[in-house]
Image: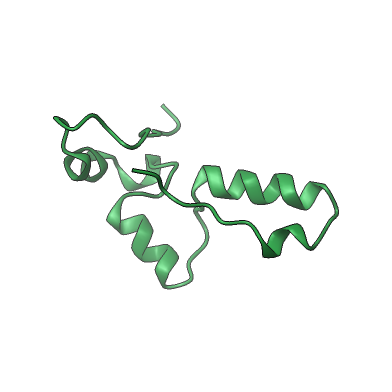
Length: 77
């Protein structure tokens, strides 16, 4: 297995923190694990969350540099 993507939000009867914490940080493609969040917070971008990184790659491929200034990726609940 190359990676694990946990689709959030989870059903109410499933503990999101327990699921996220059970994912091996190296397999956490969304970078939800506290270890990966911490690395991003200190500026270590060696492992970026797949969805926002993909969106930024798509925007960059348009050649329009202004799109980068208005994109916001957020978690819904």
